[in-house]
Image (cartoon, rainbow, N blue to C red; front, top):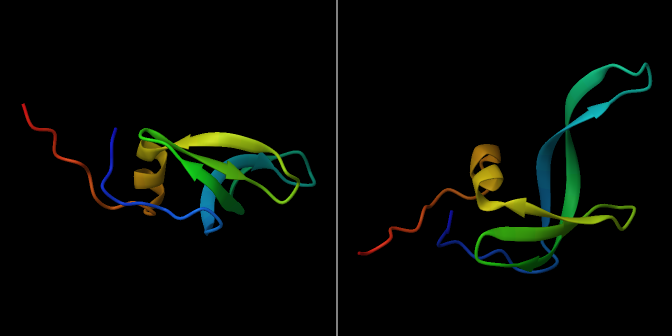
Amino acid sequence: MLCNERIRPGTYLRIVIKGEDDDGKRRVKKEKFRVVSQHPHQVVVENAFGHRWGVSNAELLQNGIVSQRMVETP
């Protein structure tokens, strides 16, 4: 999925992820991530520990960070 919105590198995002708490139970929590770079279909983010991975534009749309979809022309 392509989107019209551009996210600047260095911007902080709060993304919902599934994780475990201290008791070992699975929970949904929001974590803070820093944007490293943006590509056409994904955004590369980094957490506080320095782990990097790509978050797709569809996931950003589900989290409410990106609100526009690019309209493809034939």
